[in-house]
Image (cartoon, rainbow, N blue to C red; front, top):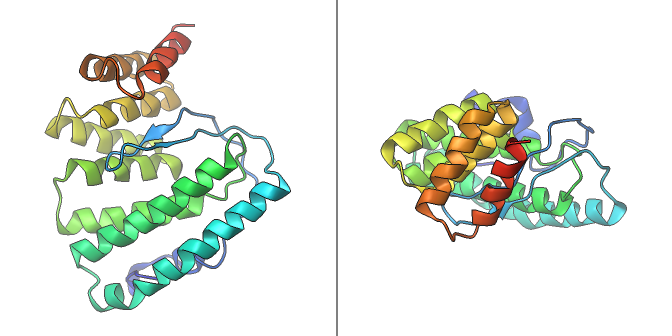
Length: 215
């Protein structure tokens, strides 16, 4: 893997060959918007994944494993190369996003270690060069899906400070705050999104979330 072996937790070193299959009960949440691509990752609940879903996830893993391994040598040689770190973080993000989408309404914990790998690489990239709102926004998404919503909120607010009208981040902040239980800030973030993109691709989802928060 394209990681600094000396500073990487053991789970990071094996994630490309073993996806944790522990069934985890967690709070369901709305889909999030990728700040770099604009695509949406589906939320999750607690239904078990079907056999076909498991096979699909395995196939996705086989697709991404060689891609990630191919970048390993370069990043090992240049562990602080921003472009290489970002590319590898994106590889993990895309992999996790596809697994998350395949799981649909299931939540077996299979995507979480991949999101954690993405978050770790985004953090390393941002330690080299900070200030790109799309990278920071995707880092926040990875943190959230890794289970660290508090850190996702912190990162999302940093993005808002850089660009108060960056729509994907405003929507995501709504999801983050809703997940944390802060309905007031969640509603405000969704409303801020709608003020920027009243007819955007996530406008109806934002409206539905606001209605749900009001109940």
